[in-house]
Length: 324
Image (cartoon, rainbow, N blue to C red; front, side):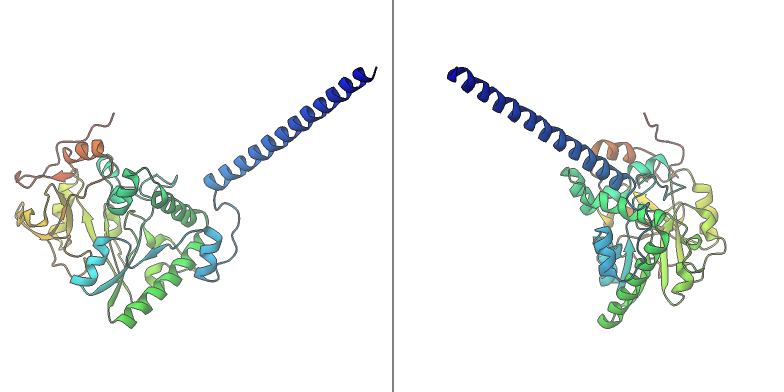
């Protein structure tokens, strides 16, 4: 009898442990599923809820977990402007085309999307190594702009003011490039009824663009260089004749190999400095091809209409990249 009771007690204990374990597992799984769902919501809908009004840059960093929106030392080429143009250029790198879920390059082509500088330089090194921090930060900034525009604008304005003050302290000129890896029409983005060119009427802005409509009624403190796509040579010629400049990517390994002329137009070394406002008028801004992380895509782009081979002295606008 005593042995039977002993066995019964052991079984009861085993049953209790089993039930407790199952309950714990159920609670854990339920918690994990809940947290995972919440985490997915944060990732896919990061800024849909109304955010606290912008107060300070420090607070914005804490809320968004972003280190910054833009800066004056964001890439090697931007930093070239400090040496060759004595410029501190505040630049923002957003997620290009539709990579964030929002279209920041409405006039992009298959070739430029495939060969975008978004995967060049430090971002390219990171992507080649299988890391995603820079890519995710650019996506988060872009979503912040589209989903919390006032917050983004207030933060950007504060950063521009801070960068301008630093330029003044350090004895540098100051300029702004908002479309380092995007092609947004910032004249349509308003804060308190004004666009960024009106808010900083005494600051010079510049960008590359594929959108020719931006040249119409362009703000006086905004300099634009039209980008050659391989498909818009007629437009490029028309703009060159009007005194505007055209940026063209050449398949050269070194800047010294850039051609001196192309189709009768002077070609300058556009990689010497990123600052375009001091360029002569009616010229081609020659840019050396920058390597990207995806070597397969790189080969396709180099063989497409987007990149010009200097030895071929005709516009390469007949060969188009066919995407699978």
